Image 1: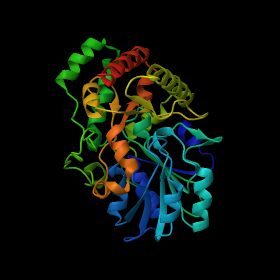
Image 2: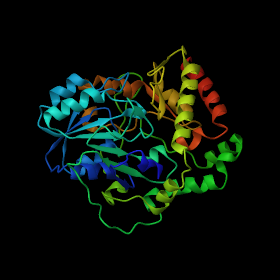
Image 3: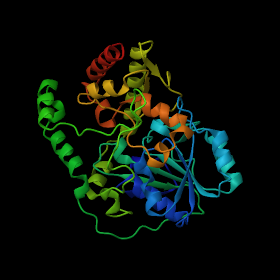
Image 4: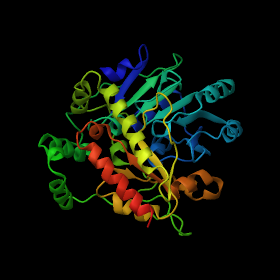
Length: 378
């Protein structure tokens, strides 16, 4: 299997969700209720669920909002707060400064949980993402055409994990929506003309997503009933293994698939960045991709009207704003200017692996960039 081949000689475990992999990493590290975990303030509240169910106490650190990189001064100061593990995210395929982070954490005697939920394909200084931390986790379902999937890689021989023997179903009821998407694809939905697909989407409208921070004025952030809740898809089994159908999909990926997707993502990133260069009201966070970096999305700052523009685009294009943020961060937003800026201005133009190899993706990108420029200029 090509995924495992990226980590030769390492301990690799497959789960249904990235959160299951995070839970396994925390238990393997011997964390106990009341232990502190140092984690970035800019993160989805959902990824904190494994920490919550284990009774861990999050301590939040800041990041640079224009690069997503760790604020090393803030990290170093908070390493002294009695934390037991350090959670570091490679945001959207872009690298952290691992050459500084790992020596600092090694000196403090703390294990590092490397989070690659949106960063399967990238490399940094010749090493693949997932090879830096003591533990590395991935959300395969966010990066590959599989109905579920998470992965844990253990890079430090000091730690081990023994998976429980379980009866694994063909698919889980919690992933039924993903199964329906698979069926639609098998029936030729994505090969149908765009006009027909638009009509079909009207019969199955997208669920209105939460917006973490209002982009205009001082209205704060909207209420969201699921904020900081433990999702049923995770609560049903904290160590849920990958389904048989997802494993079949994963093993069925053709040879060279990861490389082909990586090249396509980089090419489309460059095309979108070039098309939006100098556009009114739009700032590119990363104008050019470093060598080896394969982006999950094209991250943009919209100087005004982010929510209005997102609302106009989201029903026709694969765009997103960062989902629900932790209540503990939102309640003390003044401490985290990085979160406020990203929450109000960030728009992500996603580059899904399941779509970038389709022949019609180029015309899709051209329509999207033209409409985005028009909306930002209004």
